[in-house]
Image 1 (cartoon, rainbow over the protein chains, first blue to last red):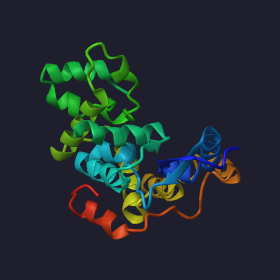
Image 2 (image 1 turned 120 degrees about the horizontal axis):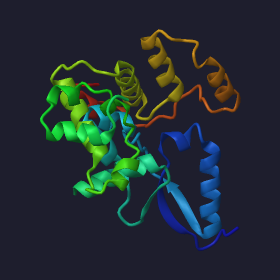
Image 3 (image 1 turned 180 degrees about the vertical axis):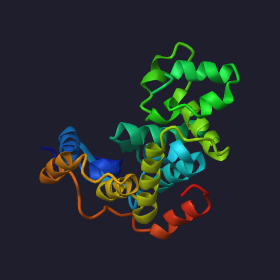
Length: 96
Length: 140
């Protein structure tokens, strides 16, 4: 396993990877370390809004998802592992 | 589901407002985007469903799937409290509203045994900031 010259990536786990699928999260972090990347969890991230926010309140879905993008440091890429979170965060990018 | 996505779209085209807004199809959609990826006309069907659901609520239409709306509200309440979803809490709130405690008990116990249900939530630190996002909204 590589421990030197790792490339830093910001990382948004999302609620599921952080709690109910911790084992998935641990595998992902190990895999990326093996591939030469260091995943740095986004500081103080919140839920992307999930299916529920965009289902009943588009404005709230926008606010919840965009807060996470606003927290991401500009100098490195942001990795999102959950397909549903990715969709929500990518939607913000599409709007701008 | 009474109407699949293509029929909901057709009802919108034909101006069948009430039928579209009161259909269960718009609530069953979980936004997986499988249909929109295959749509020959590149229609963002989940976004259409989002808009139809919100129109249905704004116009006080009969919600065809009240339990699904309850679920969404339980999720949003959890986000409002912790900044993140706490699945055990979402489940409890949903069951409380539905008055149905025992239907998924076996599955729940199995999940708990596999440590798939956390007792304590993962929380955002700046919870005041999260709550401000909710205060400006009406549905939460």
